[in-house]
Image (cartoon, rainbow, N blue to C red):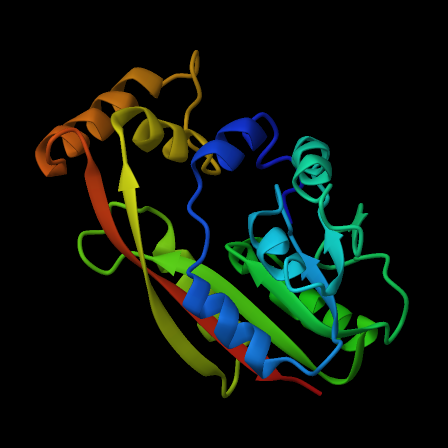
Length: 228
């Protein structure tokens, strides 16, 4: 796992990244056991963690990147049952057999899948439930990176339950540029290729927006399976 992949991107991440549909979150709440203890691995700035925490869940938010953890602290202030942990997907530092459910949102593609599975079995109670979530755009691919999310979920899971929930998003030009600047590997201001990449994003916005708003018909995809 590349710990520094999102260094310098936390502010853009929290301002522009889409959340996950209410229907998806209700579905997750229904498939987990009562009073479940969660490990949200690769928690980032806490977009998904906070959506879980609002149900009063006890959560360990595991995040290795220092910049992201700084924002994670702010995000989780309203949720005292959410504890922030400096750890990776492959070495969470959590105690053996301490959690019921292990989640990851928009993150599984960055894990060493074999080592993550081993860590899930170590920290999970008997047959822990693993839940992976990501936003996908099946229409025109404008929301980049979804192919690698699909590849990682299909590589990790054996016989998962898979559900999709509409998660329509609307972007101003500023937010459109900002959401892409939050993405791993995208050139930042001052980097080689930044001007060309930004021009391409502006072309996409000009082509697809209506009255200054670009709509993406995203879906929140939820994979879940017990492992053991």
